[in-house]
Amino acid sequence: MLIGTVSRATPPEKRSQTIGLVAAAGSLGTMVLAPIGQSLINGFGWKAAMVAFAAIAASMALLSLPIREQPTVGGPSSEIKLNLGEALREALGHRGYLFMTLAFFACGFQLVFITTHLPAYLQLCGIAPESERARSR
Image (cartoon, rainbow, N blue to C red):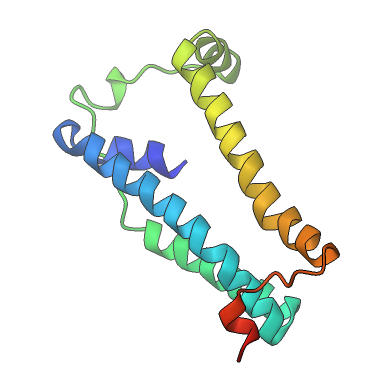
């Protein structure tokens, strides 16, 4: 959702760079938040970790408030209005949309596996999910 919003709010000449930065920041955030979550759970328990992640989610909502869409060239009347069914038919008929959906599914699937199931699997194998450095303290 953020990429679409940022895409509409960014002038065309800066759109590719801005979308690339948003995508990179999203990937970096995912990579950083998993170990932070594990550290919070180990240090303060799962309830405190949930409160911390709720605060992070609230901060994202607050940070998104300044993002405003650019007005279209012909004004609001130049926008194409589609109902949900028409929009879905158009999207499912677009090859790029189908490939992007498949890519997001594959990426999301592996991220859910790594962040959800891998720590439990490592624990079953007798390996602590936290890092060596954290265990040596």
